[in-house]
Image (tube, rainbow, N blue to C red; front, side, top):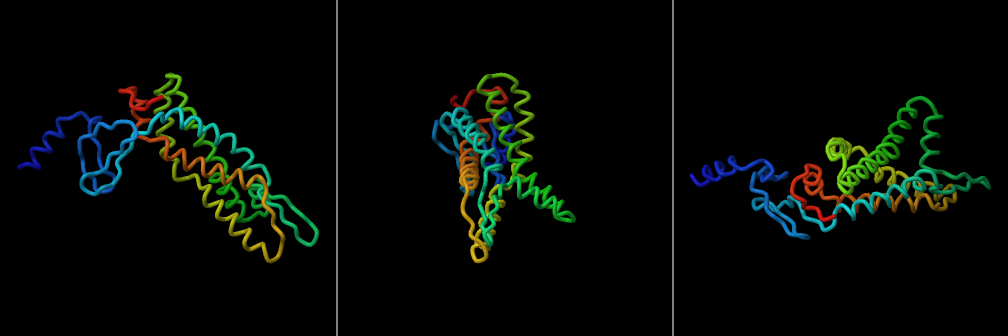
Length: 221
């Protein structure tokens, strides 16, 4: 009887006051959080969401930093390889071109690498920048909602970390037959990956959704 009464009470609440656990599917009333607090599921302990301080300002700074790192990460030399007195400089872009010029099935791989390591990460950053800018300047929030939906569908398609692992594996294999030396592009690439991870942690989705929806301002900006 108690569970039925609780369910009836939840059914009477508006949707914006409810939250569901992504792990155990428990539906509950959304808790009110102060800055720096986090909410956990009472049944399984899964973290539902947190309330970050100055989420828009901090996220904007990280997005701008990531965009500034993008060009050197993709077009500056990642490593220089010396074999029998001949040296070559390799970048992310030159790697894509080499795969494509090899022809055959490698052209398909080149397109996949190009999309996952260059196009989609840049597109995601631009979407995040526009979404945050719409909140910060209080303009075009309806477009921001549409863009943020697109962003959530693209989150799993950017694979910079996979490309980085491929670079590291290649360097280990080349040590015995060549003399690879690190380039500035590799450091920018690692920095870009770290900034994006930091951005994912900082840009709390529930605060961004609330700001875009034009409800009560929970994200301090």
